[in-house]
Image (cartoon, rainbow, N blue to C red):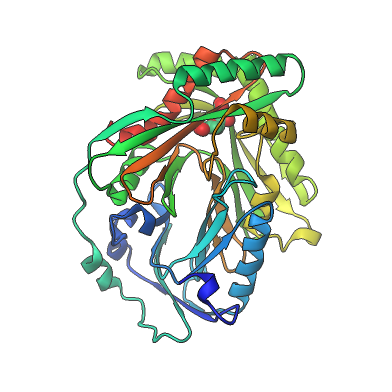
Length: 432
Ligand SMILES: C=C(O[C@H]1C=CC=C(C(=O)O)[C@@H]1O)C(=O)O
């Protein structure tokens, strides 16, 4: 059902959450009834989170107001819902999964999808939520039906890669041009991204893909919304009862596979003036964007090193409390205020966005945009859609993305190598 088909607006939806035994839930990705990437909704980290399927309602938006419009309509919808929620935890009750384009002028726009069924797990709690329209007869949530809905996973298809908008060496030249612009003082930092196409010789099982990403990258948030899939290490914002938290990343070094050598590399990353500068731009952009809304913000003075299987990043966890005047700001409104941070765009933001528009030669679509979920009370979690791919509507090809923060001291060859390392999670999950 699309929102255009719903008359009058807002319709009344019924949402019912029941507590279920954790064993009935099992692996969250296994519950997704279909192998199709377009049918999967997921936001999972370390085995906890939410998955959803079916579509009770969809809110589609576009342009510069894509976040504000989605937030406004979600609020209207949420205020008309009839909710029975026996758990009342973040992620229970009605939720919508969403993803939004990086750029305001992208045709990718944005969408919030309200699933018909959500299964979730957090700590000791596990739950099942069903969402239906008031005119439908609502069957109660049924945990045993979950097991019968499970199907065998499909075998992995073969995959062949080809260049996206720019091949690696042409992209390296574009990075060189951007380094020159930065050195001439026009802009301080620009995040340059590239895309790679993966062609499949058979259907993709999104459950297999998501489970592999989540197993390989347990520190990341594994997501699927409207055929955008990935495992991001970067949290744009979590809002939980007025408390905001973010994980800011920028500054990267590849891993070697040798633990001792990697420890030495982690130490050199933590001392690298090039990476520390790149990181500082990202933290500053986030804290400055939070300032108008926060009663207090806490950002440690120095970053820590986040170890992932493919790369290590400089990372800073920032927390903030919304002030009284903005206590009603939803997680999506905060995400909109923070997007795009200097971890995915640059500094100053407008100039960097302009440089990206001229030098990347591609539409990022929803790569590097906010992806996550929102609850009826506005709480939710929004990651930055990194280490991700967009599956084509026919399910037979994907666009993989990777970007690198470019500063005055950047070397194009090193950035090509870094972008390859950032493509690795998706490539491995596809069976490369
Ligand atoms: C833009 C990406 O990574 C960002 C997040 C962490 C580290 C980054 C870096 O060191 O360049 C990027 O700012 C990407 O993975 O596509």
